[in-house]
Amino acid sequence: MKIALISGFPPSIWNIAEYAEEIAFALSAHNAVSKIQVYSHYQNNPANGIVVSDKITVDYCWRLDSILDLIDLKKKLVNSDHDVFLFMIHHMTWGAGRLHNFMGHLLPYYLKIKGKKL
Image 1 (cartoon, rainbow, N blue to C red):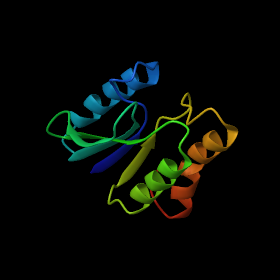
Image 2: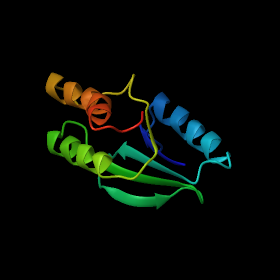
Image 3: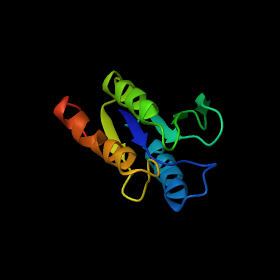
Image 4: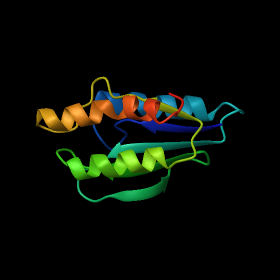
């Protein structure tokens, strides 16, 4: 099973990032899970394909306050071959503006419409 985890992730200092790291390692311990791809925000420079463990890879792919990065993230998720998408965004902020947060929190609904399993 391939899992996409959309959340904050260390080195971010948000509490949700530390929790997401624990969830990712706990899920990777199961034999049924073959790959966990984490999609997270970045502070300075994007970094793709950082291998955390043999099953966990992190893609720092969006900046706060960037609507274009959110659109790119949406495209990545729709075109991916993951079996399950796990969103840990309930305490996340996608930016300072209402539009950024609205678009970010619509991602799960958009994937559901596209037929992806959440």
